[in-house]
Length: 120
Image (cartoon, rainbow, N blue to C red):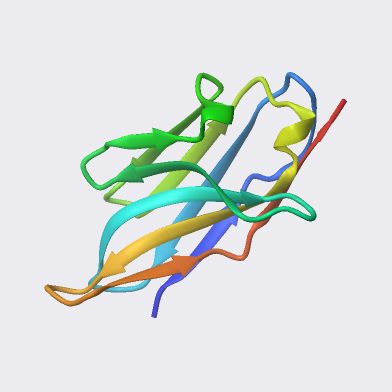
């Protein structure tokens, strides 16, 4: 079984920074990609940023130039550095991992979410 645990959310003023972290626990798996999604009240969950096992990244247009994503493959962690935060970044942020075992299929796992609130 795989568990994703997020940390680092909180309340920050507009223009401030937060760093989110997510660690995947389990055994004998391969993490093919990890990423962050967010869901604001009344809105659909949306992609924020994703990073592949090879380090390739993709960002939502709304966060480009402000957010960076990184991962530590040895520690099965992914981090999201959020700078120049705006009130519209307020949401619950979820970590997602695409995981496989050997040559088997890929499964997606989600963390429990962490609240990020940006005050104006």
